[in-house]
Image (spheres, one colour):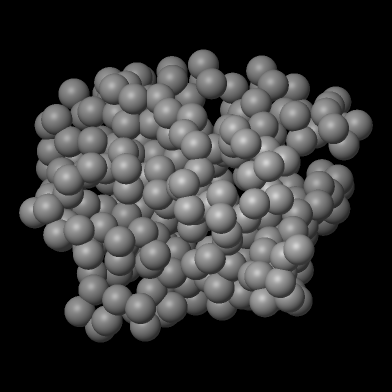
Length: 262
């Protein structure tokens, strides 16, 4: 049984109709409104703490001395882990509320800025050895401008390490809900869920696109794909989340890439 404390830090999700957000799209993706609750969940839950973040760190490998940009850094959990491994890390996010929590975690000296991945970024050309884009690209309908900016600020041969929603998983979610007409795998589709976390609810919209569209976008922006990964959760998850792991021993929540700037 999941303890009440762990339940408090879980994020439950429910698909909502596209019409639910069409009247006032500004009510979606407002991380300022639930920054603390989301951060608490992100610290300890299965999907973030024992699946996505360990996978990103494993793909990054030895980062000691490397200059890394954490694109969409949120409250700084990945930033902190990379810095603890010896990287020189900068980060940005669109949410001032999430960045305030990141600054509390990382200290006033941390290089953190408010910026939007879909717009020009406040960094010079060829600044970074690596960019970590953890669960952020899928908030964008058009990856072209964002990938062009990330390619610009990466040195030649630098790496983009990215995780995104797995397109098969999103398609399956809609099919299991009887709403497959809303999410054709081969289309680029906006989809919305209602998150409930820490007693708060929020609407979160993302863009699902097929694998071939992702690959075309990466290549078109001047990246060479070196790794496509569908990893297992961290081994510690089996002890901490035995029921979830027994029900879903292989995860297809996210898709991971390592790309080299050419």
